[in-house]
Amino acid sequence: IEAIIFNSRIYPLNIREVRQALSLVFPHQFINKILNHNLLNKTNGPWDNSELAAAISASPKTNNILKKYSDNISKYALKDLKKNNNNDRENRNKALQLLNSKGWELINGKMTDRKTKNTLEFEVITNQSKMEKLLLIWKDKLNKIGINLKIRIIDSAQFQNRLQKFDFEAVNFSYYMSLSPGNEQSIYWGSWAADQIGSRNYAGIKHKAIDEVIQKITNAKSRKNLTEYTRILDRLLRSGKWFIPLFH
Image (cartoon, rainbow, N blue to C red; front, side, top):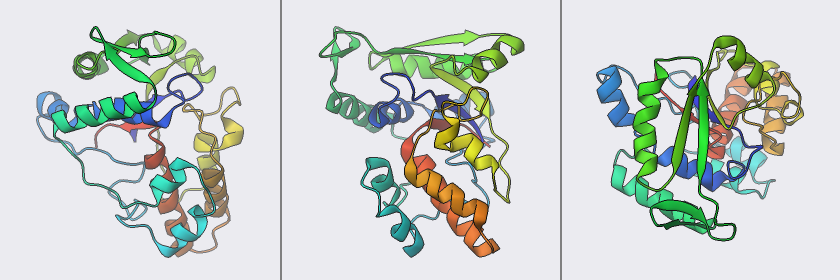
């Protein structure tokens, strides 16, 4: 899965609704048409196009595990997965509603924190020059709702150094996902790894339900259980909006 990952250790990217708003404004369909000639598919989660991908509706086992948790991410993960909405106007309006609900308002063309009067801006780092065109299209869409996206292309050594230190606001990165998931999932998404310098939990995810499901994946004794628990993890990762999956 190639994705733009948000660093949720940093305000306001630590707020799910803000991350969701930024994701909603990402024009997958337009980018696919302009840059990929419509040859690729939008990626929705880490295990797309496999039996490990989350089903549309939550299974009884999913309900049993996630109903123990009262946080919004777990609650959203219990809802049916929605089809991709390619209506830019609807997505933009939804993004504005989400930002408004968390104290942000469009003032003089700038998305502004009503309390601090700070404007909303963030930077994406990448070591791939080919990403610039894609990010510039997103920048234009974000600019229309008053958000400033800064794009920084850096060399591979500096990129790796900043990755390891979590020294970024957002980053372009590819995870290679196994069809037999195991311990590596805790390095990618486990709470213990969020503050562990050098881990691959770049998003800074700390979520008890995710930790429980990863443990169940690691201890699964059958392919059936492994598949079921991975689908639950997929639902939780999609629900948290920690990253914007790109294409496959």
